[in-house]
Length: 543
View 1 (tube, helix red, strand yellow):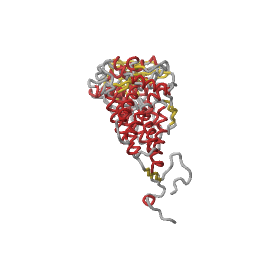
View 2 (cartoon, rainbow, N blue to C red; view 1 turned 90 degrees about the horizontal axis):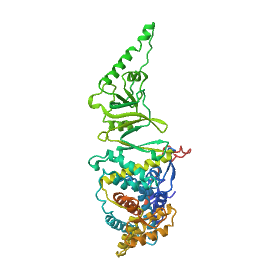
View 3 (cartoon, rainbow, N blue to C red; view 1 turned 90 degrees about the vertical axis):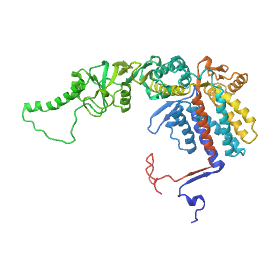
View 4 (cartoon, helix red, strand yellow; view 1 turned 135 degrees about the vertical axis):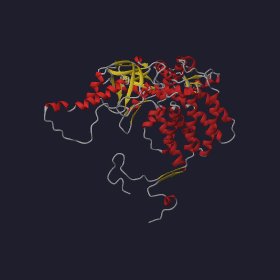
C-alpha cells in the first residue's frame, strides 16, 4: 500500500481538496452566478415569483429576494458568502437585497472573462475595489436635490419617499400602501426618528374583501374573540397574566370519600370561595380587563362575568409582549391583585366582525401606546403574505429615512450614471486594473437590463436609449416599464431609491465578490458521523 504524501498525509481520510483557477476560482464563480440568476428574475415591479418549499415543507410563492435566499438551504461555500452579503443588507437596511445578489453575480460573471484571459484574481479584486470607491464617490453627486431634509411627520412626503420600495414588490398598489405605511409609521415615530423601532408597526392579515378595504389601527388587532360575554370596554384598566386564570391542581392524586349530600355540596365550595376572592381582589384593584397567556377556567370565567370584566386570551407570548407594550401593562406571573404600576390602560377594547371572523381591536389615543397595526385585506393567503413583505420593506425604508433622508433616482438611472462615471475613470488608469474597472462599470448595466427583460421589453434598445438620454444631460431618467421612452420617475411618479440602501448594496456586493475572487483553494474535511437528515441508508455512517 502506497504511503500518502503532501496534503493527503496531513488531513483525515475522506477530505476533499480543490485548488487552482479551474477547480476553485471558476467553480466558485459558476455557483454564485447560478445563485444570482435565481434572484435576478425577481427584480422590479414585474419580477417573476419563485415557488420555494423549505425543509419544513412550507410553501412560499414570492418575488422577495430576502425570503428566497433565507429559505433556500445553500450548501456551496462561495454561494453562501453571497447569501451572507444579502442577509447583511437585510439586517442593515431591510431592503435592496436583490440588488446585492444581482450585482454580485454580474461582477463575478464579468470577472470570468478576465481570469480566462490571464489576469490574476488579486488584480481583478483590486480593480473592483478601486471602482467601488469611485462608484460610492459618484453616488454622492446623484442625490436628488432637496432630499437632504425630510419632515418625518409629513405624511405626503414620507409616502412619496417609500413609494419606490413598495412599487418594486407590489406593482399597482404602491399609492394606497405607501399612504397606509406612512400613517402607521408616523403614529408611532418618537421625537427622535433615529430611535424608531420597526417592531412598533405590525401587520394583521385578514382574508376577504379587497386591498382597498385595508386600514390603519392605532393599537393592535387580535384575530380572536373574547372569552366571555363582555365585548366592549372603554377607558379600561388592563391586567396581564402569563399563566392560566384558573384553580391550580396538585401533582399528587388522592381519593375523597363522600358519604352525605351535604359533603358533596361543600366539596368544592372552599375552592370556589378562594377563586372568587382572587377575582374580586383583581376587580377591587380597578382592573376591568383580564388578559391571560393561558386558558380561562369555567369557574374563573363565571366570576369574571359576575364582576362585569372582559377576558381576553393571547396564547402567543410575542403578541402578549406587544399587547403589554401597547397598553403599558406589566405582565404578572402569579395570579393575584395587581399593583397600580402593573396596570395598563386601553382607550377602547372592542370586538368587531372582520373578514367573516371576530377580532379584538385595541384602539389608543395618538399620545398613548407605541404600536400601530396595518390591517390588510385580500383574497388569498399568498397575496396577503406578499403585501406584508412589501409593507415590512417600506417600514425599514422609513427607518433608514429617519437616519438619512437622502434619495437617488430610481429605475436604473443611478446605475447607468455610475456605469458612465466608472467607465470614464477606468480609461484614465494605466495598470492592468483598468480592465477590471471597465468590467465593474459594465456590471451596473444589469439593473436596467433586468428591469427591461422582466417587463418584456427589448433590453438592448432600453440600455441604448438610457445611455443616449444620460449623454444629453438627463441624468435622472430611468426605465419606463410600460414600454415608453426613458422618463424621470422621481418627478413624474414620485418613485425614488434610498441613498443608504444603494450605498450599502454596492459596498456589500463588492466586498463579497472580492472575498470570493481571493479564494484559490477549497479544503473540506470529512463530515462527522451521525444520522443523515433524510434518514440515510444502511451503512451511511460507517467509516
